[in-house]
Length: 161
Image 1 (tube, rainbow, N blue to C red):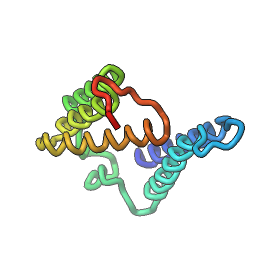
Image 2: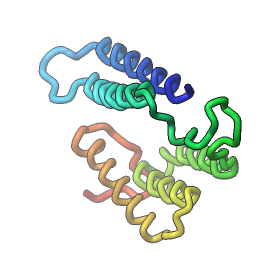
Image 3: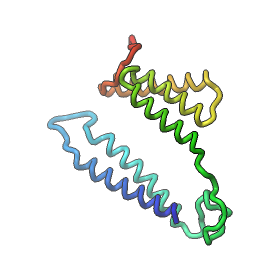
Image 4: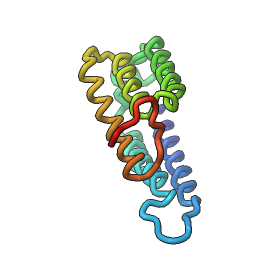
């Protein structure tokens, strides 16, 4: 039952996001990427995933993986309980990321955030996490800052490129 409620909630959220995206006013003249492009992309992706979730939730004879092996009457243990120290560490990492984003810079803070989240989630390969985090942060930085012209905080170490 929970999967049905959640999937319908996400579908409702997709409808709201798409309705709000279409309400964004486009500027006069030609723009390669207007202000409603990304909200439409996010809303469309959310709608597709939500429809898949709704179809899976309402398909007869299927049950959510979290409830496999749990009797229909709802008795028994839940499949997994949240590991609260990890949840709190992830929230703390996100708060630190938000606080460090402007003073440290986008690509530096994002790299550190990626490494911190990987560690909380169980990775013990620091060099790999640093390299992957740096590659993703720099790719995102160049996409938004250089190609799309959306200024991101340069931070302490400015890129020469």
